[in-house]
Length: 85
Image 1 (spheres, rainbow, N blue to C red):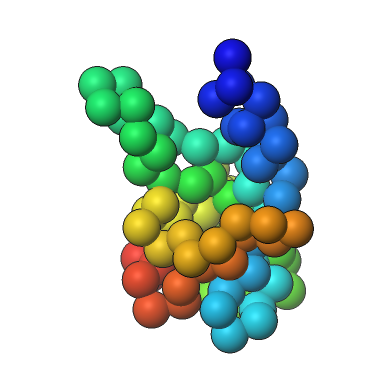
Image 2 (cartoon, rainbow, N blue to C red):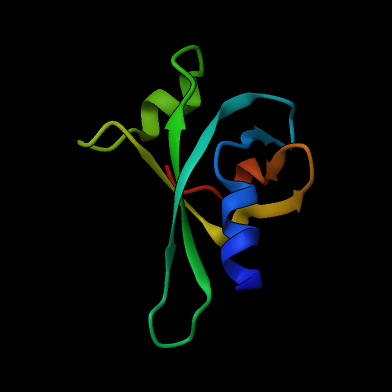
């Protein structure tokens, strides 16, 4: 039950790169069914973010590897260098 509450608290948080760019908003996470570890963040990109528009998928979302996450608080801070382009 605690994991469910944590996932709910993450939903809707803004993603910001370590360089201060407003990247978008978290809408979902992809979890490995075997290990239970978070693998990807599914993000609704900020339309004003050039980086996000380059990474946008066919469904309009951006998928960011969880390894890029540096910190979670009021925002989710991600390492720009480790994001897949």
